[in-house]
Image 1: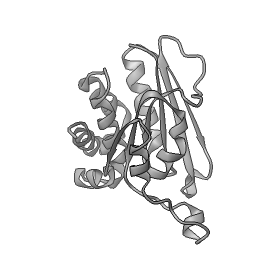
Image 2 (image 1 turned 30 degrees about the vertical axis):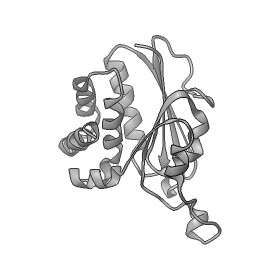
Image 3 (image 1 turned 90 degrees about the vertical axis):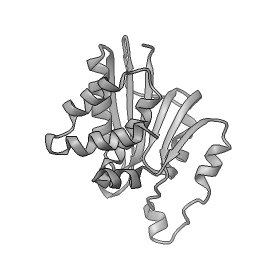
Length: 190
């Protein structure tokens, strides 16, 4: 398997850290070196969160520079637009269509940008957008947006579905495994 650079972007509380741990477990289980690093602002207050996950035969640094991400998984559409410059040519942007209003919008200082998904579609990239929040609710827990998006990611990866499912079982707390497996399956079958 080739080196793989994945960025997970969203806002605090959306489960990006669990998603990065799950990816780390997945890559370790298939015998790759992996480095994970998270950078976040006011994550506990809904601020921007970005996690870097790099895997390969030998990985020296977890940081992904502009134009180097093979995949960007975005839990919120404004964050997809914000981090788009990090996607490499030929990369895939997988985004939730959910909108979470940042503080400047909440206090009336600015407006949430309109037509983000349409603008991303015109960016000459491979874009997969889905309403992962509704899918997660249908799976039984709106907090399973992360595993819905990982299901979508898995469908577009060279890693077997069985290996993804094993990583979920090993990483997700036991009482949430079933709902996360269901959310993953719903994302995988999109």
